[in-house]
Length: 143
Image (cartoon, rainbow, N blue to C red; front, side, top):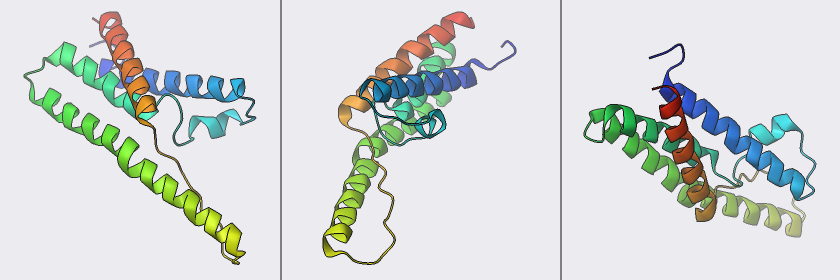
């Protein structure tokens, strides 16, 4: 291994690239978000959750082999993260939107909850493809 672990490098590069793409898409759509907010926003295209987990999954597959225990563990975590992004977090975000709408309609005097969106399946697949490409590039660059 060099100065930086290829596993950590894959995670960091995937996270940065995914958020740069998210920010670029937001700007192209005319949204005016500050960079700090955009780097930590939930949801959007592509999924940085999928990108980071698939990037490290790819490095582990190529570096340690698909028969390694580490590959099995990273596969499990990647599947859980991607499932959660689409199913659990997306549902919670939709429920949050419904609650916010009910509060507005009923004019109740309660604090408005934050509604964080999860991801659509397309956003997760896009993040996974991005992560796989970044993982491959990181593996080749750190060989």
